[in-house]
Structure formats: C-alpha cells, structure tokens
Image (cartoon, rainbow, N blue to C red; front, side, top):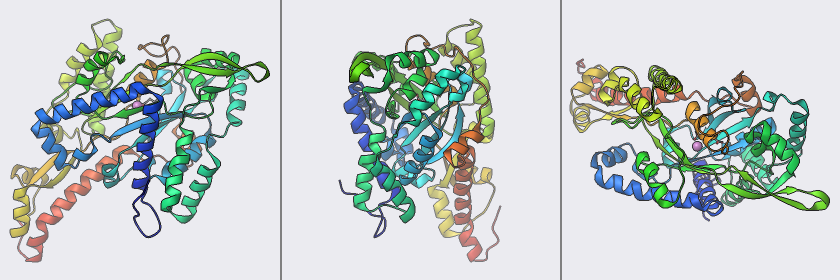
Length: 477
Ligand code: OOG
Ligand code: NI
C-alpha cells in the first residue's frame, strides 16, 4: 500500500483514516458476509436513486458530497475501561478523529456512555468521513458487587492494543505524524484491536452471569478486545433498502430509527439487520474449550439530512417524545404516529431557514459571483437570498442521536430485550467522568455546525463587498 505524503516527512491523517476505513471494511466483510451483501444492496440502490433524481445529484456535486456516497460509513465499538478509552482517543487522533458529543445511553437502560470519534473540519470530512461510535461500559451501574469485581478483574488483565500499535501512537505524538512506512504499519496494527475473537477470555459460567446482568456487559467483558460490532454504509433511500433487505435474505430490525421520510431530510435515519448468532469457545477445564454462542455483530445503514439548530433539535425531541408516548398509550402503530407527529416540522428549506430550525452553508450564486466581480454589494442575509445572490445548501448532520442509538443497541442485544427497549433504567449521566476517562473534552457538535454556517456566510459577505470597498464605492444595503 502506498500512502501520499502531505509534506516531506508525514502522511496526512486523512490518508491514514481513509486507509484504515478501507481496511476495516474489508475485514468486516470477510468476518460478516451478510455485511458484504448489504453493501451491494446499498450500492445498487444508490445508483438507481442518482439516475432518477437529477436535483439530488446536482445538490450533492455542488456541496461536494458526490464522491462521498459510497465511502461514507461509520462503525461502533464498546470498551471496558477508562484506560482503554484513553488510549483509543490517542489512536484515533493519529487518524485525525476527535471525540465529538456525549451520548448518555443509561436513560435507555444501557449501561454505557459514548462519544463519536470523527474528523471535525469540513475539508477533512469531505476527504473521508469515517466515524467510530465508541461506548464505555459503566460497571459502577451494576449492583452485584461480586460480579462487578469479577468483570473488573478480567478487564484489568487484558491489553487490547498490540505493542507495535502503542509504540506507533507514541511516535506519532512525539513527531507530530507518521512516515509512509509507519503509517502503513499503524493501519495494520490498529486493525488488530477491532478484530473478532471467537475464543472468549472467560469461562461459560461467568459469561452466563454477565449476560444475565446485561447482554452488553457480556459482549464487552468476555472477549480479548472491542470487536467492531457493525459498520454502516450511507444510503440515499433508506426506505428502499429496508424493504429490499428481506429479498436478499437479510433480516432487518422492525422500524427505521429517527425522523420519518420527508422532502427535506433532517438529522439521521438508521436501520440495521439483526445481529447474528455466532459460535464462540469459552475457557474450559484443563486448557479445553467449551462450545457456546454469542450474538453481537450486525450491519447498519444510514441516511443523513440537514443539521438542526438547538431550536430545531428541541422540536425534533418533542415530536419524537410525543410519538413514543402515543405508542405507549396504544393510539396506533409507531410509523403512522411518527409521520403524523412530524407534520408539525416544516418541510421546506426556506421555512427551515426562516424559522431558524436548521443550519445552512452559504455560497455565491452565479449572479452573486457576477456582482462580486463587477460592482460589489452588501446587504442582509434575507435581502441577498431574495435577490438570488446567495445559494444555500444544507449542512449535513454528522453526529448521532441517543434515542436512535438506543434503538440500534436494543435490536441487536438478542431476542429477549426485543425492540421495545429497556428492562432497567439507569441514571446519572456523567459527561464529566467520561471526559476524565477520555483525557479530553468532547467537541460540542452544535457549536461546530454554527461555526460552519457563520464562516460560510462571512466568506460570501466579504467576497460581495470586496470590490465595492476597494473601489471606495458606497456599498448599498
Ligand atoms: C452502538 C449503537 C449506536 C448508531 O449508529 O447509533 C450506533 C453500538 O451498538 O455499540 O452505532
Ligand atoms: Ni451505528
């Protein structure tokens, strides 16, 4: 593998991430053939959407998204200790991935809290958007003290990173980057952390106890490392893929998480296929292995829409809560009630902008370019939009949704929990303790979107008024 250099010495972080996501994808397709099948289905459907939807094709090419379609995917892992999380942050930093946002899953009865490691700058996301949703087990939420101690001991005695990976992380930190050769080795070594191990770290009895406490705890504690539990390609028609999955022998979860289908997609819609039951070996007596099984790994798809402002997000949360409350009180089917509730969410970009519900990237229209070159002008955002001098494109939501994530977790934890969710509700989200373990603060995703919008607008305004100012012409409002 040859990696392009950004300067004489180091490979760019974007390039390392691109190689890493490719390597993860290849490994996972080999480990979980159903994922490969899903990828093919998604690619077929994306091609047909682009063939029939000229305006989407033009929007994607305008906003630089066309190249990203087949590449865009995320993965998810779950780690057991603060130390593991701390080192993972350093490992992801080598690839230009930083922790963005804090997700408390305890509210949904899942004893973890999470962040997503991802590129932060728009240019970096465009080059390769790969993200890893990363959850840290909260053993302190487990009541049984003996079991807690047993799990802790197993976790404390494992090393999820290869020695070479640890050395390369340190080298990257010291030098500020990696050489070509080191970067190639780094990708190979980093991959090892996320590999599946069919031999468990513990015996079947302890597995059973952990599993009875919570399936997720068994998944996190029982193995040598935080195996990648799913990867997620991007689809342009999630409803189409959901319907087509069974035709290809793939078993989807019951409902698509997130907002309903809309003309102007918002946030994130996701669905997955059910986790597979896989053969594993547990430690037996006298160095023997006992056969058993474990259910953890699956495939997911995602469709992203415009990022919402705090006001838009509050409206989304309210409408989703309403829907769930109405389902609980037996008013009807989830999907119907979701569509009904979301009628209250404006569904045109003009309204979304006018009501301050979503984030946009502004650029000069052809007419705006012409004006900027010839005379220059200034004015309010509304005025410039109305005059057709600016164009606005949705800023795509690059993060996750806790309620949706909980739905994805639950549909993949095995048959008993099913799709209806929690059997226990934990409390005390603790962003502070999470950040302490991480050794860094997480980025505030809303601030990132707001900055992007502001920067795009400021750049337009500067370009528009440049000539007028230079020519010392009074700029008209
Ligand atoms: C993570 C589930 C969350 C998503 O897309 O919301 C997630 C997990 O199952 O470990 O990946
Ligand atoms: Ni996911």
